[in-house]
Image (cartoon, rainbow, N blue to C red; front, side, top):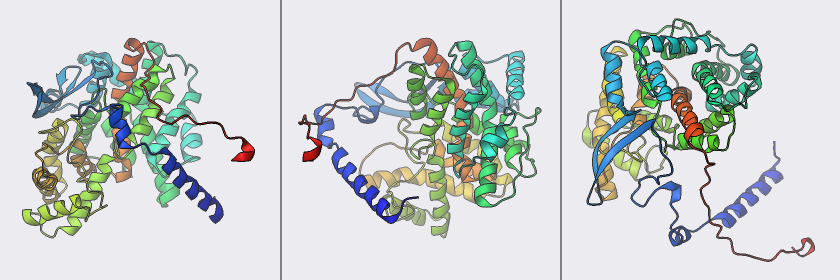
Amino acid sequence: MLDDNQKKMVKDLANNTVARSQITTSLYERYSVKRGLRNEDGTGVLVGLTEIGEVFSYIMDDNDRIPVEGRLFYRGIAVNDLVNGFFHDKRYGFEEVAYLLIFGELPTAAELDRFSGLLTANRQLPLGFTEDMILKAPSPDVMNKLARNVLSLYAFDDNADDISIENVLRQCVELIARFPTMVAYAYMAKRHYFDGDSLFLHPPLPEYNTAQNLLHMIRSDGQFTDLEARILDLSLVLHAEHGGGNNSTFVTHAVSSSGSDTYSVIAAAIGSLKGPQHGGASSKAFAMMEDLKKQVKNWRNEIEITQHLVNLLDKKAFDRSGLIYGIGHAVYTLSDPRAKLLRDYARALAFESGREKEYELYTLVERLAPQVFCNAKKNDKVICANVDFYSGLVYSMLGIPPQLFTPIFAVARIAGWSAHRIEELISGGRIIRPAYKCVQRRRPYTPFNKR
């Protein structure tokens, strides 16, 4: 730990670093820099091609971008059709979607059985891993621990650096299978060593799929209802993939293009997803709504709710950031198809858990927030609720604590990351290296004794 003098020194150094590292907005404009790899109209700069996922949210008409209802495609198949298909047949969907993303085609019953069997055979962690890598080195943050767990698996792999497709596929299947176990055990270690709660570790069961095992491992009694497991499975499906342009998937492509090993690539993606502007957004949206529930007395009073939303935008409520978390998206305009599916299918869960009034409050905020935003910002930008808005509510109804919201996102997205890593290794061929222009003026060297 630093003493007071050292803390002051670090603070002074930080202030000096900020002063010397600030690049003015005018320079970005002067050199036509695509900040955040975004075009002026908010669309992403095209830097790659993919067959895995596609986000569709607008059409072009005479160079004008016309908002449309959002659509999401996995390997060219609308996610709505996938979800409605397995719900209609009363099946679970995550394993089927993971197969589709990685192998490019929907599995037959026999193919799905074989793939599910592979996952079942690999859910257990290597011998000694739980004790040595998780319980002896817990972390207060589950995402931090998940990244370290993934990196630690490198030492348990006799062929860790082989980037042949066969070997990478084997590694990816193992990671998809092990993510729920690593997340659950990392959380249990956190609860015990940092929160003082009892420690319990349920082994994954071979008769359970990904969603079922996750609920089984994080609940003290290991019990859950069929509806609960199906709604969590739906959430995993909706978070499994979102095109190549999202931050963590781009990181997957970038690090894969360097020729690095699978464990380093996935750990880097986890670090990206951990950020509050990416995978951490659902926790923020949930915390905001928890605060709204306390501040708004009548959950059906549209005037009162509208005023609270105005206060959020005016930096007078919640964290005073000026944001309504869960409302608005970098790509979607009229609607986020994931939010609509999660909202519609979670309605039954809200009634089963006795939280229908809370569910109705969410739907009311979803309806009011876009107009409040446009009035406050005095523009006609089209925005909608995104999947993060409803994710926290769903996880809360499942008894899942906020510390697990983003890790569960990772349990789902490892399927998409795996597909994109394999695609990059097969079709990429060049290291991803965008250009940065140095705007520091040239200056002479100052000898040490004259500084």
